[in-house]
Image (cartoon, rainbow, N blue to C red; front, side):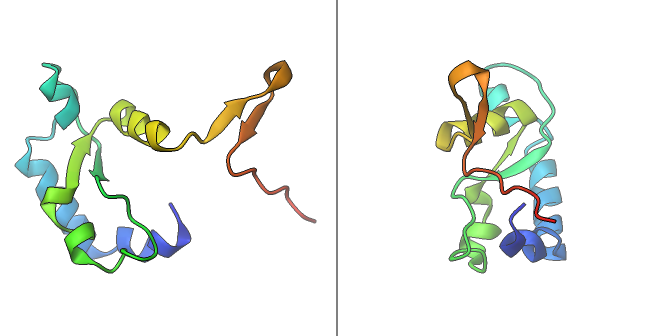
Length: 105
C-alpha cells in the first residue's frame, strides 16, 4: 500500500463501502463467476486505479461502478497485466521494477 493511500484504506468510509459491496455481490470473485467458477472474493479492486490525484474523489474511490470483487489470483493477474513488478534477467536474476532501494546503515 502506498503511503498516500494509507489514510483512505483505513477510513471507515472505505471499510463500510468495501464490506457492503462484498455482500452485494455475494462474496464471490466476479471474474471467476463469469467463467462458471465459485471462488471466494477477498479483494475489492478499483477498476480505475487510485492515484495521488484521484484519492479524494469519491466518484473514483467509493463508487460501486468502479469496484470489482476479486480473488487473489484474479487481482494479481490484473496488476501483472497492467505493470510487471519484476523481470527475470540473465542467469535467472530477479530484477524489480522499480528497483528496490538498498538498506542504508
